[in-house]
Structures are given as C-alpha cells and as structure tokens.
Amino acid sequence: MSITKTNFDDLIAMTTLGQAIEAIEKHFADDAQIIQGDGRVWHNKAEIITGEQEFFGGVERLDKFEITESVVSGDTSFDISIMKGLHTQMGEFDFKQASMMHWKDGKVIKVQFYPEM
Picture 1: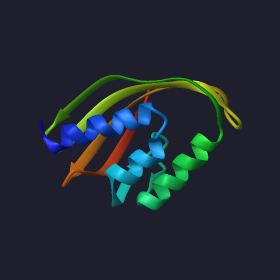
Picture 2 (picture 1 turned 90 degrees about the horizontal axis):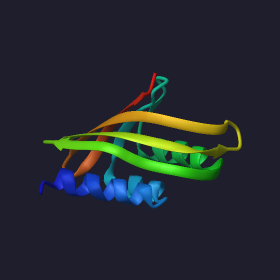
Picture 3 (picture 1 turned 30 degrees about the vertical axis):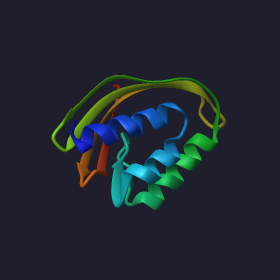
Picture 4 (picture 1 turned 180 degrees about the vertical axis):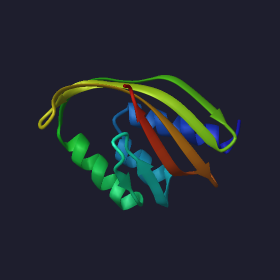
C-alpha cells in the first residue's frame, strides 16, 4: 500500500471520528491550500485550521458524515462525502461534495472542493 493511500485512509478515519482538526495537523503540509467550492482559498495550514474550527465550532448537531466513494492514484486522492446536521448560523445543512487532494511526501499540499450542483 502506498504512503498516500495509508495517509488518506488515516485522514478519513480521523475525520469520520470527529477529529478533523487533528487530522489536518497530522496530514497537511504547512503550506497546503484549500480551494472551497465557492472559490475562497485558505493559503496555509494555520488558515485551514482556523476555517475548519469556525465551521465545526458552529455545528450544534452532526447527524451524518460519510465518505461514499474514494480512490487513490499515485499522489492524488478523490472522495465524495455527505454531511448533514444543524449549524448555528446556517441552520439545517445537507452537503454532498467531491474533493480532490494532491499529496507530496505523505502530506496534503492542495485540496479542491466541488459541491453538488
């Protein structure tokens, strides 16, 4: 099994267990970037952690977080996820999105999210 596959599986397992911030700290490069589905860009691990803390800090109830499909090929991983719950600012939410992660030396260097249209 490749280091990318091993680390991807660990990242997903940690996130599914509610350890998203810890997963980012462990598996993201310091200069990683995330491009959100709305075009916002987080330019480094610190911005990514702050953004995720702001979102997850507002989650009052998480009814479902599931990765429905995933594939790893070389230094690229792709997954489709579903997340449902209640957020203090957004109210009820029901997201389905795809993400593509690019990896280097066992760390995520870039994530692009593609929301369901």
